[in-house]
Every structure is written in C-alpha cells, then in structure tokens.
Image (cartoon, rainbow, N blue to C red; front, side, top):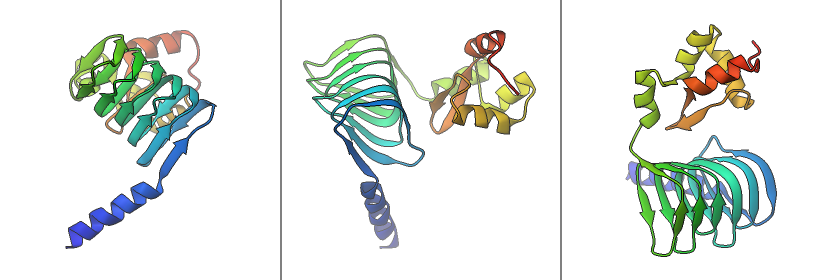
Length: 184
C-alpha cells in the first residue's frame, strides 16, 4: 500500500511538471528533473530533457535533442539521443542521426540519417579511452572536477549526457584545447 501511494505521489509530481509549448522558441532548454514536455510550435537550439518529450505533428525543430523517452510526430532537423526509447509516429520526419537503445518506427515515418542502437555506449567507449567521464577529463587536463562541472553547466566544454552522466569525446576535447577555448 505504501509503495502504491508513493508511486501515485511521484506520478502526481511528474504531472505537475508538465509543460506544453505552442510557440516559437530559440536557445537551450535543459531540465534536471523529469518533466512531461510537449512541443507543438517551432524550436531552434538544443533540448536536454528528462522524463517524456513529445514533438507534436505541427512542430518544427531545428535542434539536437537528448532525452529519455522521446516521441516525434513532427519535423526534427538535428540529432536525437534517447536514453530509453525513441518513437517515430507516421507523420514524423527526422533529418539527423539517432542514438537509442530502443526505437519504434510507425509506417510512414521518415529518417534521413544513421541509427545506432545499444546501451551505455559512451560508458563502453570511456573504458576504451575514446570518451572520458568528468573525473577522467579533470585528470586529463589537470583541473578540479568541480571546474569541469562548471564548464558543463555553462555550456563551455563539448559534452554529451547519457544516463544522467556527462561524457567527453577525447577528439573534441583535444580540438577544444588546441583552439584555446579552455580557461581554468
């Protein structure tokens, strides 16, 4: 009974964090807590969400998207990383690469890009040395891990989020350093 009540309370909190965007927006939307986000208008920039993200059938996004549970019914021009599942409705048109452990594509949906499926790909790559965790990056460039977290939060360092953790492509980090963009 207690578990059921706790699940109901969590569900209610999640439903309270529901956001329906029916306008034109530009920039970066990042949610640290799970939210039920539905976009019906135009959006340009970057989306980094937790929870459920729905791109409505009238939506036009020119954005890279990172989220957990993503459903696309409209047009997305950008790469999509879904940590749990990506659903493409029959009206969906996705122009970009997909990275997800599970995908559901309805008849009529269009994908122009590559699809990569698997779980914890960044973590496996980190163990090979292609990608680094926050601690590995801090050690690599000899700074405090708090500084790396600050750079991530300010969008200063090239990073990818997977499963609630940040990962850094060694090749992009080397380029970022050679361009003099690192400031300790």
